Length: 344
Image 1 (cartoon, rainbow, N blue to C red):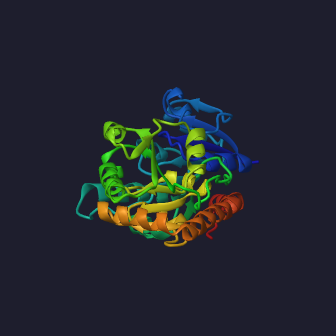
Image 2 (image 1 turned 45 degrees about the horizontal axis):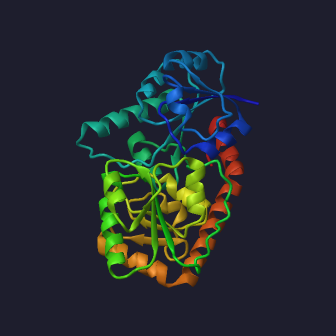
Image 3 (image 1 turned 90 degrees about the horizontal axis):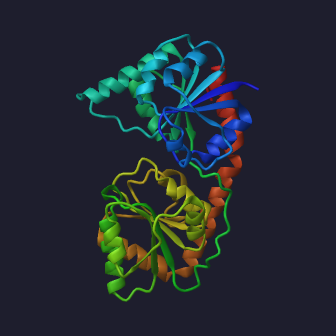
């Protein structure tokens, strides 16, 4: 079995299934930069041995030939500069979807130089989160074709039975996450209030924390659950009908994966990148515009047609199961091609 070095430059709570599957393919050493105590709670896999070490020492062992492949999350983390030291090696970067900055800006030229330098130095492969539409952006920066493969954020859950029938009153909507401006919390509250002011009978459940916590606690239309751990978020979603995420900006939105795993129909804004993988509009959920009226209208529509809502719930969980069941075989193929230098 090949040996892999996994460097996690920053805590990421949503790589559970990826980490679990990677340990079936490689003999892995996991390292974080700094005290592991600040990372441990961010990972569901408590049986994975995560070690603390300086980046330079870990990379030194890699360049000395102790590992066959290096896998890291974060293309433009500061540690990337250290990868220019040492011999040519297979290198896999797990990256967020990338929007090309303006060519007139310093950020564009900095990212361009990093990608081109890594491509020259190493056998570079990029696994892009979710949809591959962003591969063109990476290739634009690289100035040449660069192998890009999809990977996903998934909790270490198999599909979970949803215990809530859409036909049972009331219809339950859930928001779970940070209460911050980027998530359009105040906009979402305004839409819920519009719906409730017209004598709507759906229930709205919020779990999380953040600057707008007081507004949520003060809203009589909201049932506030506080900050929940992963197990209790799962329980909340599994007893609900619709998961809401109407962010103004969302690099992915891993709660969408979790909502799909728990059989919730999805109500998402256009800015949520996870829509590329999970949202088939009208079939697994709906896209809403970022306005209180559109949010209220979507809530009304989903609450009114219970047959359609149940159809969405069944479809999204079936879609999630299909994705999960193919995840390991797909990942194995991608990694074998990446480390052998072949293209798919």
